[in-house]
Image (cartoon, rainbow, N blue to C red):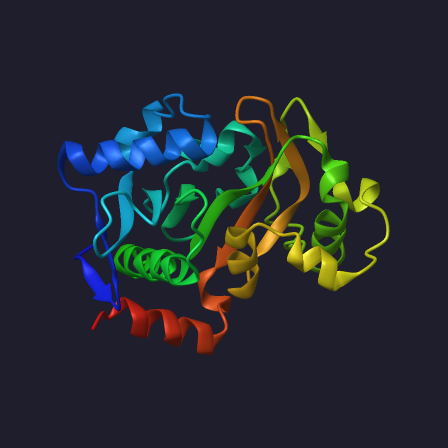
Length: 244
């Protein structure tokens, strides 16, 4: 992916040890309370950063694993928590977006959009038809996220034949536990920004959440079928990815 710019933000692949160190420092702060967040999958991934003028650290950062057609979905990070065998028959490449993190304490919607525009470039370059990942809620108590889980259960479950199966030690089957849908507006407001963006792109979630004691989060499997992204949103991301 070539670098591109819009407004005060530039999106590009990490280049050299300094970029990688800045990304890893942000991941450590967001996911580990300052402790190292590196894992073996990092070496197989592209690392993307969105940087604002005059700022050293990234406004947003994430990694991308490109699985070519026919690759085993078990190579994905999500396979540590979900049985991805229902996706094994997908006919083309699959892209996994992971370790997405925004600069702590300084949420910038434009940085989020630039991150998705960068992902759009990678997805189209790879010819991928699926974007998968894990979207996280802070904390491990599902009750704190009842409105959001109820909304997911009521309106955003994926096709039964594609949904991952449960294999993790601790799962929350939110269609059964989250209760009635209640206030959809409250549920939407309680969703993490990345998950809201997934859903706005026509994405869907699996039928259960996973308790991740290692990261201290509750996360859900997310998937975007590229061919089903609303045309207006796809055109907007492509225009943004064109730079200018």
